[in-house]
Length: 58
Image 1: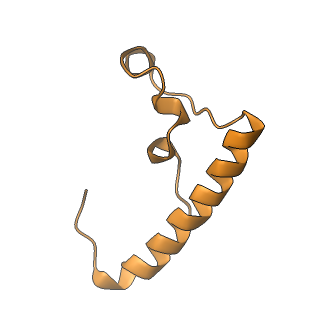
Image 2: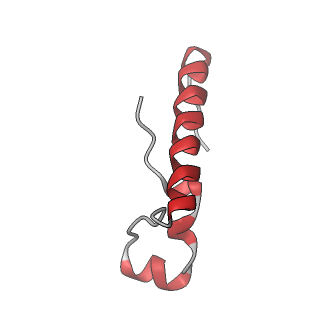
Image 3: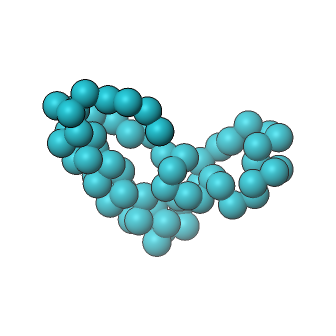
């Protein structure tokens, strides 16, 4: 979590919705994995297949 100006919220929500759309498409296609640092990937083996690890672009 972080603090952001209220004016950024609509754009950020839109970017997250778009990332979710692509993530779900990739998940269905079996390519939703992202590369994580070695120790983190070992500690959380399924984290690379979670939406929270995806990059958000505006």
